[in-house]
Amino acid sequence: MSFKDLNIIDPLQEALDKEGYIEPTPIQALAIPHLLNGKDLMGIAQTGTGKTAAFVLPILQRLSEERKAPVSRAPSVLVLAPTRELAAQIDQSFATYGRFLQFRHTVIFGGVGQGPQVRDLSKGVDILVATPGRLIDLMNQGHLNLRRVEFFVLDEIDRMLDMGFIHDVKKITQALPKKHQSLFFSATVSRETEEFARGFLSDPVHVEAAPESRTNTLDCIEQRVFFVDQNNKYPLLQDLIQDGDLERVLIFTRTKHGADKLTVKLIKDKVKTMAIHGNKSQGQRDKAMRDFKSGRLQVLVATDVAARGIDVKDISHVVNYDLPNESEVYIHRIGRTGRAGAQGTAFSFCASDERSLLRSIERLIRMKIEVAEHRYHSEKAKNAVGPASATAGTYIKKPKAISRRSSTESVNRPGPRKSYPPRRH
Ligand code: AMP
Image (cartoon, rainbow, N blue to C red; front, side, top):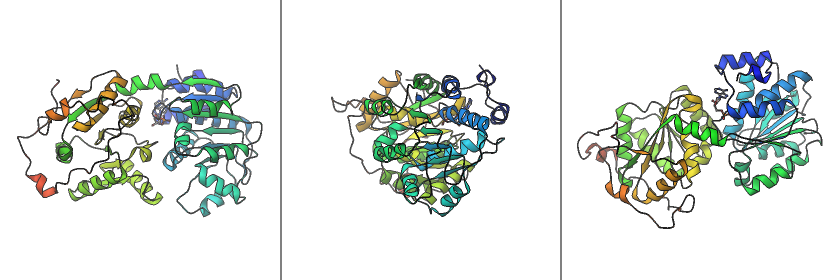
């Protein structure tokens, strides 16, 4: 199947050609025909499945059929996203796919001055991408009204509900006109999201890309687990970095504090690193993303919430410095590498107290992750049993301070040079 089969108009087709996208992804093939037909949609799709283009393309196509002039403070398209990073990326997608069309679009979120956002809205935009809080602020101040919205997209509803945006989102939906097309996306299915969608969508089509993407994700990622004691995690990371393979690495820690500590160590060891998490200002996050994208940074250390929606091409490695408490998160994390068909590598560090988390992950992905051999290998971690009750998401390990070894200590490393690449066990 090609985009032509989906009756995508030429200017969009040209933009897709420029991106080098030949075939629609499954969620695009499933969703686009319904969206072009004006249907409401409930899509289950994770980041990495091509879900953004699945709504951006048909919306641009429908807008270009209408050809209405933008009206001050009253956009035709409203997209809500839970995080600033995701909102910025969606806005960028409107720019990318709409490069041969003349629509005005902008993104608004909190944490930055509202002046430029107010000016953009006042000049008039066709497409507005926003996080809920700032949107409501601007609505309350009279800088924006939603009465002309024709297309309403709610991305990552599950995350919105998790982050406590439900009241804001409801308030926003109440300001929409009766007649509009709604497109909801969620990475996971839950009773809460289902109920929320049922109360709002009218006769929606349901499309799901998750199972497909999961196989794809796992198929094109080389996964390795490194059994290691907590206090050897940093020396192990140093070894891997010194190996030279880790070109552009996204490292996940469980806590913000852990992310900061690791970042300080890496910088001390002259590795170009920044951290991205909830306590960072918008300016710091933007800079980190820009520098990581441009290749100025080798390492970005992130917590799960901050990493949602990070879409950087060519991430060579994802490193799970700490394993996630929920197995599903493992798939989200490693899906950042090897995106859209490119091969990537995911390394997971597993200490004794994370052993049961690894078991849950392996149950979920229905495969045993290959064990890497390295000089800090810990048999204790490999054979650890963990609490009997441990299952995905139920075993919450107390965040533990990472290695306190100083960089001078870590120069005197034990044992022979590592024998990575790993041997199959
Ligand atoms: P998303 O799930 O929207 O975050 O998209 C994941 C990645 O896939 C992004 O880098 C997109 O630019 C890319 N992408 C979207 N559609 C296609 C396609 N049809 N073929 C190849 N890559 C795509």
